[in-house]
Image (tube, rainbow, N blue to C red; front, side, top):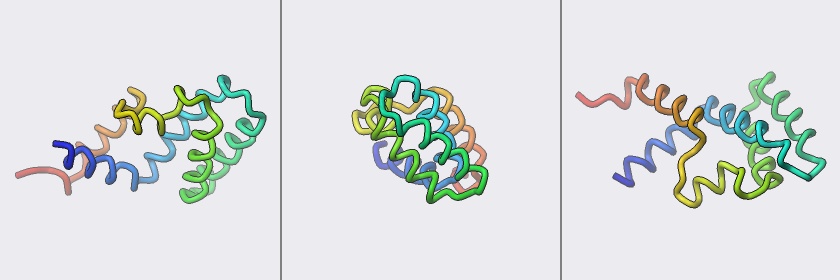
Length: 105
């Protein structure tokens, strides 16, 4: 079961949508951040989405995870075995269900 979970997480994280959803989650928590670099990172992240620059978006999300309080980060949640936000989890499930390569039978 853990292997299946790891494989589905790896597949999800390879999609451009995953990083957009991680960004939305992290950006929604910026008000909890005391670091003045967080709003700038949000602007850089939105610009990366507008340019479809997934590499830069990943960098921005990881930077936001470092700037946010530890309890608010998706990264921390994943490290502790918790699930991602309900909104992101629902989107991931829908994306995986619609993937013809993951269907059995």
